[in-house]
Image (cartoon, rainbow, N blue to C red; front, side, top):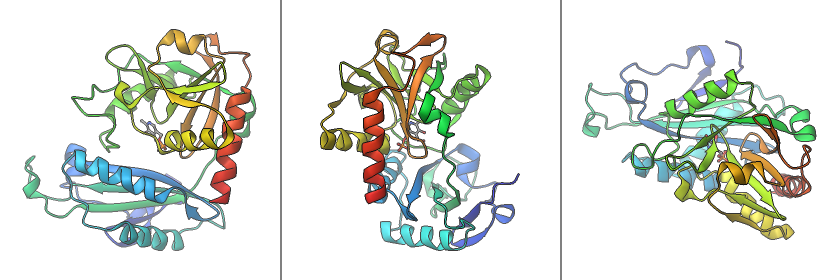
Length: 290
Ligand SMILES: Cc1ncc(COP(=O)(O)O)c(C=O)c1O
């Protein structure tokens, strides 16, 4: 493993080799934990308040107390960044809160103290070609979790659903894997949200389709409003994607990446679309100005 990560485990900052948690942590035993992935622009975590809002919502949905203020967590992140080897580059920041260490039982009372882990490493952007030429994605047959099982709205460390879908996407050579929900509607990708563009309007599945409310996705509604592009929620099916003028995916670490192929079908012109490009430009302008 060579990733030059710097890690903060419950306030103790080390290199990656010494970053360890107990096997009795319920994050490890049961996948009971939640997380956020953030990145910096000009050295500052972008949309920090929105990420903290989602973190607390995820925690609430698994009945996990987070006994730290946003400012507490922010100063832990800054301490970890200060100890890391970023050489002036931008940071990838993963903040995890798990149930903590306790007896082998699902009873939350066994784990009164959550574990807080922060991983900082250099932000790695997608290759320039991904933006310039667009990417090919695949639709996987792993179904996104039913919202009444493990709700996809929880940004949970319990990532088997995503991992199994991503394995299939990797096997089939896709940049990402699009997952459908139990009704057969498109939901999201394994680590990103999905948008299509039809007649100049950008459309993304509603939360009701069972997906993670991406911060980048949410921010694109603001960007669209500011630059005069209609960005809306709408339930989408395979045929909407196949007949779209453009498509793209969004995530914190990848911003907005044009999709030009789905399996063996070409989307739109087969090149990154103009609405996608305008939204990406608008996004970057705001990210760098923030
Ligand atoms: C399943 C899933 N959907 C969507 C996203 C995109 O969310 P965000 O824009 O907040 O990074 C992620 C983030 O990695 C994700 O894991």
